[in-house]
Image (cartoon, rainbow, N blue to C red):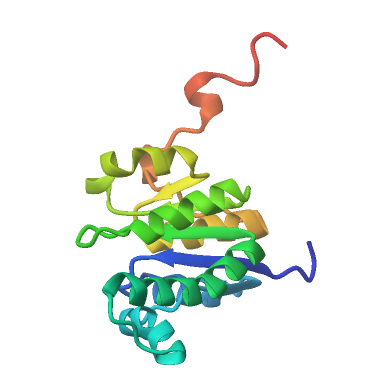
Length: 175
């Protein structure tokens, strides 16, 4: 669609540069994409409610204040998103990322999950709901490029790639 800008929400792990890699790839391909994300400052995310609304004596109350303030941004951006990308890293448990993947699915959003293969088993239910499961940010950019422009990259399998018609036959044998 000419003139359309795709809203892509980048959720999940905050300890690596995966968001920057996707932003650079989108820019390099000049894709009509607007990227958004939750607040990625862990300290600000934890303390925002207490800073704005006042400190609480109990940790659970402090956490609830921050979570509720952060939810304003998260819910709004998830609702506005055309595509949600959720990144899971190996080092930390990312309950919020799993929750946002579930919310995106419940909202009927297109979902791309991004994580290393080593944690696939732990994320099998999340992966089962995703439209695509990627291993690196470059694959996310390639999916965005294909979905938006129809351009395909070179096959991941290189010279070993065999088109489906050659591999499994052409079309439906029982039309």
